[in-house]
Length: 352
Image 1 (spheres, rainbow, N blue to C red):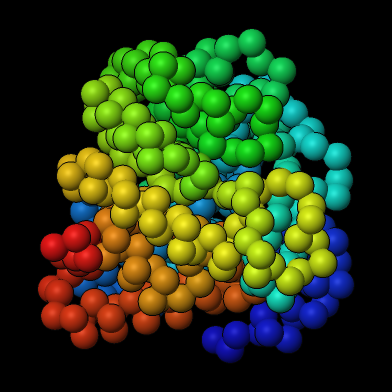
Image 2 (image 1 turned 180 degrees about the horizontal axis):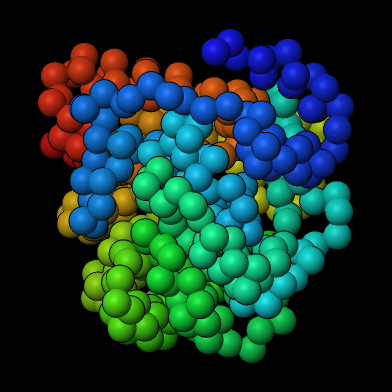
């Protein structure tokens, strides 16, 4: 199937970014986005948390906020997908415009503010899935902006949606909800993760529990987070969310907009944070690498730095839905080139 996205991209870029995002969701709902029918090579298979991943490339949270198209996403060729962030109550998010392209930098800035339809709507969508064998689906939870208790919001999410998830994510790292990133501190994080861990353990399905962290962490922050997640028995870390930093190299007109920066400028920073967590946890904790991935080489760098799985999102804005097929092909070639029998054997190779 030919890749038509390069022809369509100028038309999509003529639209406001959030409008184009809505069109992307529509194309998946209707089947217009197509699918990847080719089987993945065996060396890309990953066994993790008692689950099978056909390949280690996943779609990050933020695209499918209301769990509308997880199976359509998986049919594009992703090995897994993550829906959300989902808050207990519906909330509109921040005023538009709140999503900005930086084409010169192959980057995106967003200040969405956890706009979503809430747990009830997401639950209906997840319960109605007709094809649950397409691949693992993770559920990412956030807190409502006006909530008095973050931990109560995460517990509500686990109670409502935990039964549908192949893994669960506590998001304490979005820069667009006031005070959220402060929850990454040692004390607040422990206060959240202890009851959340207990709630997940009480589920019949007992899905893995992951924590998503920011890239803008000090060495002390990272050491504290590593200590708490190992102490509380969290099953994995997602490194990283978007950054509030603005590199001097940014050239896009929207570079001064507030919000989280993602895409190519985040690659090096997020990979370094990932490597730091692999070292701090001594390779004992599965890591998901996200931030700036746009090629097989980018994904391979995350894996060698310590990632068992890799996610992307912003690169789809510039590469389109067929990008995942190219990334998988390039990644398989790199893994084979270096003599690894499987991609899992390459995890953390740069530390050895």
